[in-house]
Length: 287
Image (cartoon, rainbow, N blue to C red; front, side, top):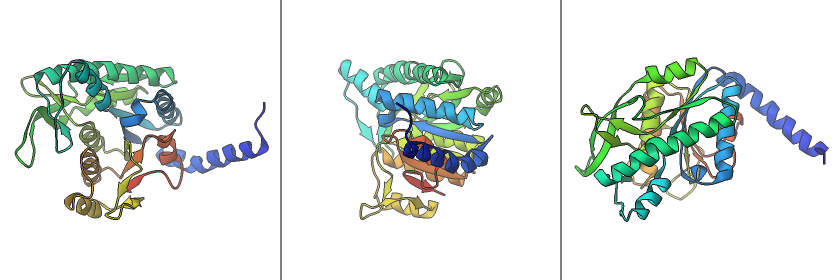
């Protein structure tokens, strides 16, 4: 059955709307944090990989930083390990770290790289085993909480990322850092994505999540907020849990030279394309 006239008009309208954005972002680095439902649903996984391939094929330079919370949680449950969270971050002891290394550091990293490559854009995983991309140190929270083997980013070795981009390869980054003693540290993927975006002076940082965006105190979705307003939202405790590091990463990245940061709903098919190639986008823009 062929395409109807109405379907053809819709397709051409979408392509026409997307053209100025393709021109605007041609040759620009866009850092995407991939996580949540978009990593768990097979159809969304394939859609994400195709979106990254499309970005690459129209001349953008996507850099992917991935999470893996649900997958790690499943593996820990199988091993009988109960996770504790403080300030939205997983407390990580040695047994938990071994699972994080296996699942987040290698398994998921390889899976995403392979999926993007099969979708038409060559991709390569950058992880703690093959390049030591993230120089890190142990994180102590503002409340002086000890989270175990949880790290903060000291430095990103951007030469490794730039080398791949210059060869037309999509870097896929696992958020595990190494300290000076080569001890691996579990780092929040949103934080790593923000630091990578800053280090590369990226055009955009896009954080995929499982909510529609940032809410105000009345529960209304905010389509755009300034860094100042975002800081007030954080200070007033309007966001909490896993959304806190996302908003912090978005605010810090815009302060650090990234032109705009976006928190979008990864449960929407092709949310990435809607964000990049349409006027309205989806989710919340911090700019």
